[in-house]
Length: 244
Image (cartoon, rainbow, N blue to C red; front, side, top):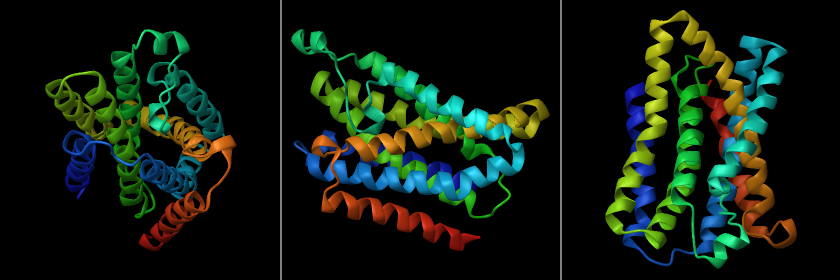
């Protein structure tokens, strides 16, 4: 079943990310609603599944690692320019010279994507945690892949865009596979994975809350459509509790 989840994660990321290469001028409003939905779903799974698991394993120390993850994501934004939560923040000087730091964004997102894969390689106490987490990560990877492919399609050639999409689609599944294999083979690595889970959870909290504030609204206001998207993501997150 673990292999099936990994394949589906790759397929969703790749197929979703390929859409900008087939269809031009994708609707920005729909993209922002998709981000709001995925952010809400990711946050719900983090609170309902990931945090209970990690506090059970690590106790109060989990809070320390959560804090590290939250601020680590803040540092990663220096390289990704905010693409993982739906915006590419380019400095004015970059706009003036029409320069988009594609490699910086790809490196930052690759680190972020690898981190996302690590919790997928852990054996959880609650039976519903693993499928729920895969669903949440896949929902987050979809708009992320759409955005990065759009960025490369607009600033590079099509062949390079396809190559970057394939590589990006492989990184999170690779993180899951490495975490699984090392965790099964080495006790020290399994303990390291346990400590990394709250770090990734902290990053998820940062990304999700940033999406709520920034995705597609002026002056951080909530539109009716955005509220419905957030409620939809949260509702599906609550439904995953039925997997237990």
